[in-house]
Image 1 (cartoon, helix red, strand yellow):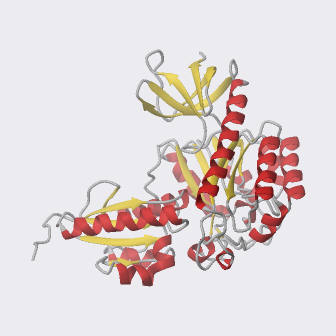
Image 2 (spheres, helix red, strand yellow):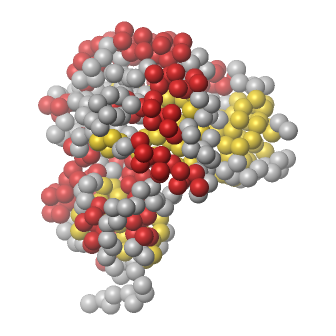
Image 3 (cartoon, rainbow, N blue to C red):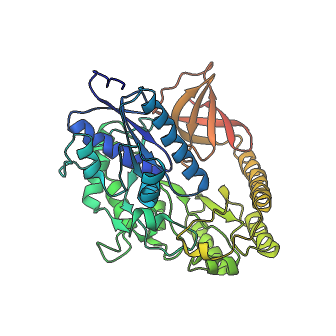
Length: 434
C-alpha cells in the first residue's frame, strides 16, 4: 500500500467549461484562502478539485477524461485526493459514482459549503466578492445571477443550475469595488440570462439600474454584457449604453436560429420578424454597437429549407461577431423526445458553411477599420506582439489587435490608443498613436 505524502495539503482547482465555471472556481478558491488553505489554479497540488462542465457532448467528454486522468495520477501516487464538482457532477452524480467510484467525493453546483467542509474549510457567509481571480488582472467576470427560468427545448442548464436567482445590486457593487481595488478595469457581466435580471427580487427587469450602479465604481473603465436573451429584452439598457461611456457598445445575445418552425420547436418564444425587429432597434438606438450571437444547426427536424432561411438571414444581418455550433442531443431536455434526424456530417457541413460566410463578413467589416483609431486594452504579450482588444471584443472569442512589440513597449492591463494598419478575418494589426 502506498504511503500518503507528508507535505502540507496544496489544493489544485481545475476549471472546465464556461465563464460561469471560472467564476465559481474563483469563489471556491477565495473561500479556501480565507480558511488559510494553500490553493492554486491548474498547477500542481496533492489534493485536486475538478470543476466540470456537463453542457454538451464534447464538454462532457472532456470532463470525464480529466477525471480519469486524475484517477490515474491518484493510482500512481502523484495526488492523494480527487474531488469532483460542477455541472457534470450535478447532472450525472449517480452514474459517475457507479462508473468512477474511486473519486473521493462528488458535489453538485449548489453544494459549495459541503465541498469546503470536505476540504477542511468553513463556508464564510460574510465573504462578498472575495475571489481569487484566474483571468488576466485587467478583466474579471461578474456573475449577476444563477440559473435560468427559460424553457428552451435543447438546453440542460436548468437541470444543472436550477431556477433563475438574481444577486442584489448592492452585493454586486461591493464585489465590483473589490475587483477594482485589485486592478480590474473591465467587468464582464455574465448569467445564464442577463435579460431576466431582477425579476425575482425586484419584480421588474432591472439590468439598466444595475448598470447605472456599476458605472459609479471607481477604477472600472469598461463594462461588457454577455448572454442576453432576446425575448423580453429591457430596451432601457440601450439608453444607458448610449449615455454611459463605461458601458461597452457590445452585446452578446445568443439567437440560436431564425426559422419560425425551428424557433417554435426550440421554445424560444420569438419569431424571425420579432428578432429582426429587435436587432433593428439595437442598431437604431446604438449605431456603433457590436452584436455577438451564437447559432445552432442540425436541430431535430431542421430541413434544407430551414437551413437556407438561416443562411440567408446571416448573410443579410451581417453580425459583427458570430459562433455556430452543431446540435447536441441532451437527455432529459424537451428536444430529447424528438428524433435527432440530421446526420452528423450534414450538421458539420452547415456549421462550417455558416462560419465561412461569417469569416467573409468579418473580413469586410475589418477592412473598413483600416486607418481608424481605437482605444484598446492590452491583455498579454505573445511572441513579438502585444495582444489587445477594443471595446467591441470579448476575451477568447472575438477579434484581437496585434501591436508590434519590437517597435513599442506596452504594459499588460493598460489602455492604449492605436491606429489600424492592416486587417485579416479575425485580427487587426495596429500601431500606437502617441
